[in-house]
Image (cartoon, rainbow, N blue to C red; front, side):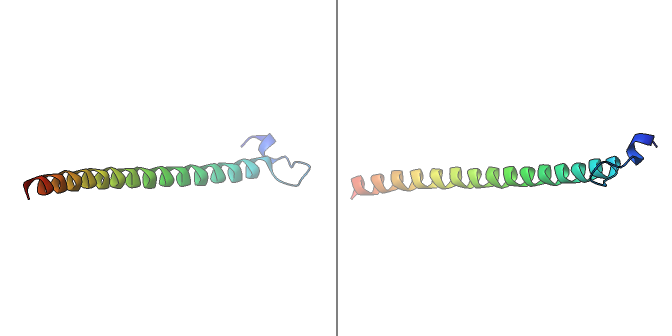
Length: 68
């Protein structure tokens, strides 16, 4: 292990401990971003499906209106 990682900073943290804490925080943040992007993708797909269904219903309504 590097001697520098055992050295304490002015705040009392070991440099290695602080880096590990920052790494855990970054990993957690990255996981949250990934989950939010996945949810956004799911919602966009649902929106596209609903848009297609609405267009289909409007087309069907126009056909039924013309034929009656």
